[in-house]
Length: 259
Length: 72
Image 1 (cartoon, each protein chain N blue to C red):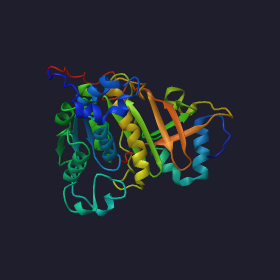
Image 2: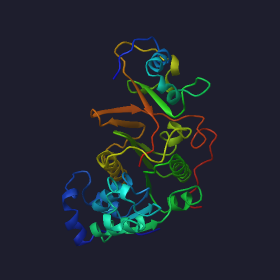
Image 3: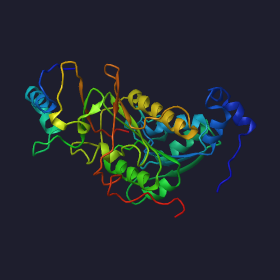
Image 4: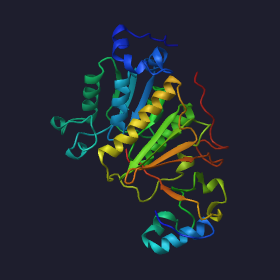
C-alpha cells in the first residue's frame, strides 16, 4: 500500500485559499495530492478538466490523447498553443500543465483510449473523467470503470448543449445504461465553442474534486443537461437498466482489487 | 420550446416529427421504436422508468429530448 503523502509548506501556501472551503480543508487537499485521475481525451473538455485539477493540486494525472496539434484545435483546446502546431498534443499538454503545477505527476500516452489499452490505463487511476469525442472510446472506459469499480465523471457537449452525470459502478447507471449503442449519425467533427466545452469541463473537475475529497453530493443518479443557447439548466433522474450488458443483472462481476 | 397537446409521449413525438420531418430519422429506429440513444424525460423522469411512449402527459408537463452526444 502506498503511504499517504502529507502536504509540504509550499503546497499549504499554494492551496491556502481553497483549504478555506470549510468541509474541504487540509484533509481534502491531502486527499487530492494522493489521488490519480484518468482523463481522455485532453482537448476542449478534457484539457480544461486537466488544467483545473492541476491547479487544485491533484497528485497524478493519466492522460491519453493522440495526434499532433492542428490549427482547428486552438479555439477550445487550451493546453495547445500556436507555436506547437504540428507537434504532439500530449507534449503540449504536459508542458502546459507543468508550467502551472510542477509538482504534478503525469503519465502521458500518445494514443487515444481503445479496447486494448483501457484496462491498463484505468488500473493506474482512482477516478476517470470521460471526455472522448467518439462513443467506442467512451464505451471502452465505461466498461473498465465498471469492471474495476472506479467512479467515472461522464460529460459531453455538442453545439451549445452539454450534459454531465457521475457514474458510481453498480450504484448508478453506467454510460451504456444511458446510451446502449453508438448513435449512427455521430460524427468526429462537431460544432463547438471553447466556452461551451469549458463550462461542462469545470463542472466535471468540480465533480472529481468532490468525489476525491468526499465533500458535497455528487451527481450520482442525476444528470444535468444544459442548453447554453438560452441558459436552460435541468436536472433529470437517471436509472440503471437491468439488461445492461456492462453493469446489468447478467454482466461480469467487478474485479477484485487484489487481482 | 414547442407547445403540443396530446395524451401521451408517443402521440406527442409523432406530432413533432410531422411538424419537423427531419427529426424522424434521429428519434426513431427503422422499426418505429424510439432510438436507444435518445432519452426522453417528462419533467425530471425518463419515460423508460414510466410507461415508455405510452406515458401519459398533462398540459403542464415539460418533455425534453436528450440525444446522446460525445463532444469532448
